[in-house]
Image (cartoon, rainbow, N blue to C red; front, side, top):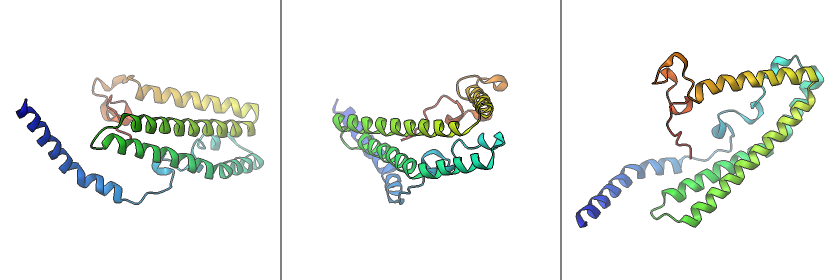
Length: 183
């Protein structure tokens, strides 16, 4: 038992020694408020690609531009809240001793931040859709359905002719079955 405990302690120290410089490098990187680091897409461009194919009038383009820029500060704030909550939860889970209460509070904070962001996205989407004519809304729904179908094929086990390994899309972002390691 003592030998096992000593081995575990040595392994823990070795892992900490390996990862300590990495965590310091991450912590020393200056934080940015850019939503592009949270989602990979600038806030002002999220969900806009389908709108470009709808033959919008100049008035509709102006309305969408206004909506996008009115929402940008709030979306940035919400993206930052999600990012900060993820960092907090990661820090709690990486602590030398695990504190269940802190982890639960951090997890709840992250869930609320993500829920607030999802609600704001839904609100913005509804406002954008209200600018469209009935025909444009129908066309947008067709674009979205096609996009959903395309993503379902690559992310949820429908590997087509790629075989068991998933072809070139076997990584965690493409349905390879591994946890993305996001937070």
